[in-house]
Image (cartoon, rainbow, N blue to C red; front, side, top):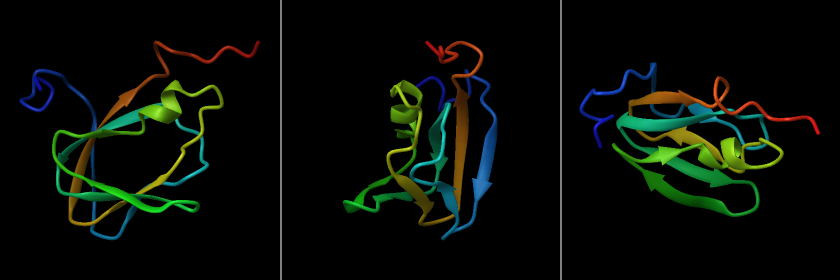
Amino acid sequence: MGFLRGSWHLPTRRYEAGEAVVTEGEPGDEAFLIRSGRCRVHSRSAGDIRELGPGEVFGELAVLSADGRRTSSVSALTALARSTWSAAPCCARSSG
């Protein structure tokens, strides 16, 4: 949990309650760490999946999957701050 205590420098973005953070089906090469607040994970097929809070990570499936698409949407339930880990510099997808 060193990244929560500030030993990693990750860009942070803030969202208001009700704001979309990521949308199911969009391309994704970033994963996110919740710094503060709560969010809801949901999908068209499964409905509400779970709630996440500080210290939890989301978005990693898009980074690790072959097609690089978001498998669910995430919306802020409260004021939310999340940090970004980008796979782009280290994990470029091959086209073949």
